[in-house]
Length: 295
Picture 1 (tube, rainbow, N blue to C red):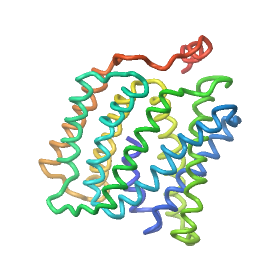
Picture 2: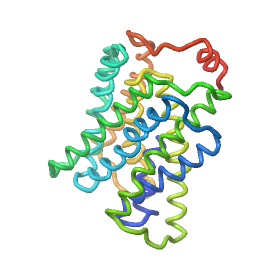
Picture 3: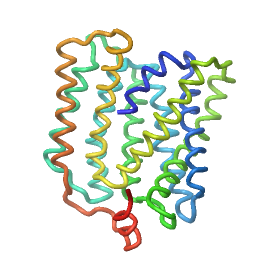
Picture 4: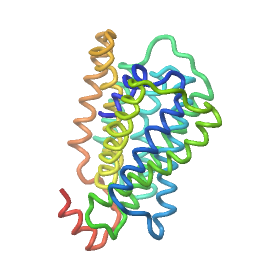
């Protein structure tokens, strides 16, 4: 739900036409802060795993997301993003052996329909590059979600919370480091920032990125991937409600019905997922002990 506030903060507080700068400022400070809080660097296989996850979940995803945002109406991009649960379900079946329940698939279908009612408008320009970017970003995040579930959290940390701090920080740092040179190449040096810009970047970095991704990766490493991805359908609902409450944007009856359908889909998916058929990643006794004692 925190990601649903991104549109309002971006349009009202951040410098205009600087999407890559916004992505860099979201990811890199948050990543460095979490790495410092965890006081842990990757070890062994986690060097390349962190690089892969940071590229898929942050660096590549943010870049493609911003290309889609510039070339597509927001409604089209949102509907393509809502297809994520189906891609995650397919990848989870292939990589994890987890078969999604029919309830989750039905909830995903209802969620896509609800998002379409909520955000699509009659006049929608379908730019091929924008469509490819939106689809690529959705696939990138879906693959990162499934791999995150497969690899779990790094061992050798004082607690599961510390491991999650480190894992989230590594990914955000990798993504921010990938975005920084692209930002300088495409957008040039950042402009002078006013108080509103600083406040907007601070909120997005600390709350909308560090806090939100910490919760996201906790869910990814604990819950069935398709169930976690269903929660992402709440972002368009939050964005629409904030647009109505803070910006005076109207909501039609069809949009309200779409929002209700999304909420119903998320609740149904959360109640029905349970333990999906197929194997969850194998864990050792030390990992089980950490999970049992984690807050």
